[in-house]
Length: 197
Image (cartoon, rainbow, N blue to C red; front, side, top):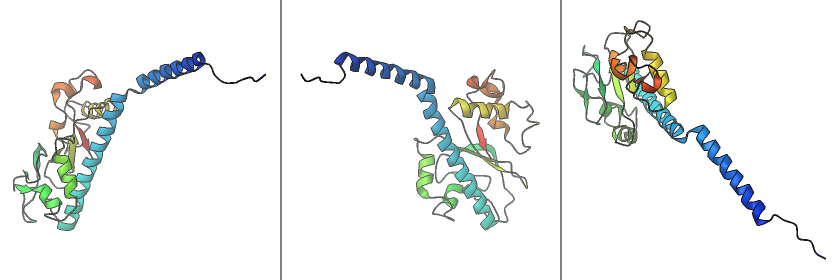
């Protein structure tokens, strides 16, 4: 007499059903849309950091910013905050194509493929700002989509309505009252910019 050992079809169906229920529970717990938004925000923050670093390296090697005509220019600001949309877009009062200066047309601080990606419709939009006074920082900003990044941007903006706790060279445009500082909580703050540094 030979005894076959194994699972019956009913037992296998029960196990598969239990695994399906567990998978649905795990997916609902981790919120895949939020995870996708967070990963895109992280990538955009990386793009912003790369642009700030390229600007700093350019300044260190040339002695003036890539949106300035030359070292003699006194027009050092990008104020108000400007959205980056094209490689030949001009910035500052000297009307210099900054991305061209930073990429292969200038010092090659950033790759042309990076420039093409940040101005393409597939990447999140970046904004740049520099108040223009000596010692002021260059800020590169984006509007976050994930709850975590949105909350950080909202918390930074809501510290005080008059920006008393924010850096003195920080753009008030990054914290618009509508849908940002007047929002009741971070989920309603859809217009707060996340700015680096």
